[in-house]
Amino acid sequence: MITVNIGRTFLKAYNKKYKKELTAKEFFEKKYFEVFFNYPKYLQWPTNSPFVQMKKGQKPYLLNTEDRKEKLQNLHDKISAGERDASIAIGFPASEAKEYATTSGLITDMNLDFHEDEIYLSWIGSGLSIGVAGGLSILFNQPDILLITYEGWKVYRKLLNDPTLEKLAGNKITSWNGQWLSYAYSKKFRDTFDYGYLDELVFFKLDKTTLVINTVKWSKLFFNLSRQFPEKTFTGYIFSLGQTNKTLGFYPFRFQQARKLIFFYKKLFGENAAMKDTTYYENMYGIHIKRACELGAIGMQALEPEGLKKYFDRDKMPNLKKSKISRKTKQTDKEFEIFRQEAEKKDYENKIIPFRIYKTWLLAMITKNKEEMSDYTQEVAKAIFEYRIAAQKNKSGGTKTANIINNLFASKSKKGFLEILTEIISDKVVTDFKVYKELRDRIHLMNNEDFGYFVVLLKFDYAYQERIS
Image (cartoon, rainbow, N blue to C red; front, side, top):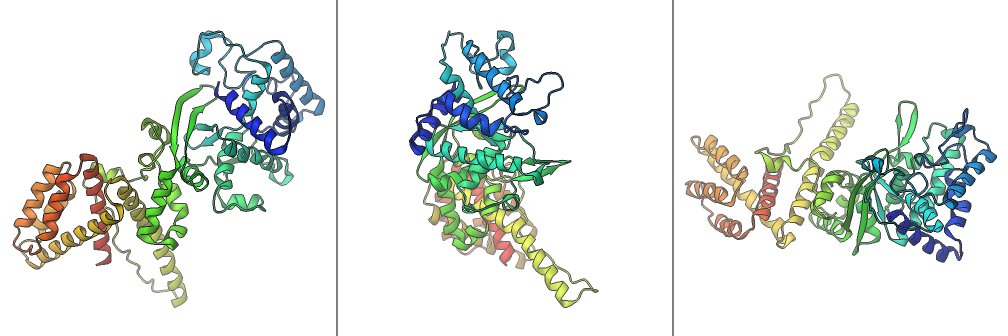
């Protein structure tokens, strides 16, 4: 069971770091139980375990110290008696075979004998699960990551015990772990912080009357982990435990590919732009975690930006034209200036940043020289734009030219693209044939996947030409 292995890796790293020799049971009693269950609000709600099985009239928030110690002893007794079902060992199968379909994953009919210490390790491992948006969790069998996650337990406990945060929900350790780990490896981490600072980083949201922990987007976690492990590939186990257990499997997380994206972003748009746009590219990159797993690895392809797919599927150009800001007659000059600045800021965030994100990813996906390809698509886009302008001056050719360009960008195959390119070269307004000849040669040599990325990239560079002209 993976939770046992994770717990074992962590405990070994913990004992080494803090110069201890704790057994799994000792760690569970002295650390895990004390932080997770020895307070009115739990950090975790292990289904059907002794900690959540209440006697008549009992409620978790009404339990006293003796009541909680009794539940701990109940767990000890069940483990000593040899019980090994999902309510006693986290991540294990249910006690009855008929229940396997809904509450268990990776079931075997082999008679596996688990030592008592391994049952406690399963609890420790489960408490290190990293929750991400989409209802799934990740486990990394990496000591550094596990130790950082452990440090976050104490912070969550401190917040839950704060009387001014009585609305903060308990039992959300996996969601907390995801937010904490992402924060701990981010540029925004600082040693001294409080609830207000974490709230600014969108750790929390108010759900009716309860303050809950937002689950972090996997791509944001991915980018922040890549800062610490820029050249590493770690295997992550992706799953969920609940009323219905789900096991997606083991997947390589290729952190070096996140660094490549950031490298190209800085190359294209500058260091200052990369710093300014951090929040946006963390949030915009990345398809749904389940779809990412279907790719077999968490890397460049899984980081496909949100909203980009529609530009592959149909002839739809991105709206990058300048916003029109009209002056309201009753506004003072100062008020109008504030209005103008806010409108331009919104325009920048909603249009320019997505353009940059789309272009960076498309370049990274094309297997040629990325920097050279970036300059090249801009050159081609400029030539096509100049072709359109020249045709507009010829009053009879404006509409026809617009249709030709639209059809070029809507091409689904290299053959179709080259056929439309032939139409352009045949137009008498075209005088610079060199750029089109090179374009023909490059398209011919591209594989089909690169061709798809290239055309979308070209569309964005063309739209940008329209914006700046």
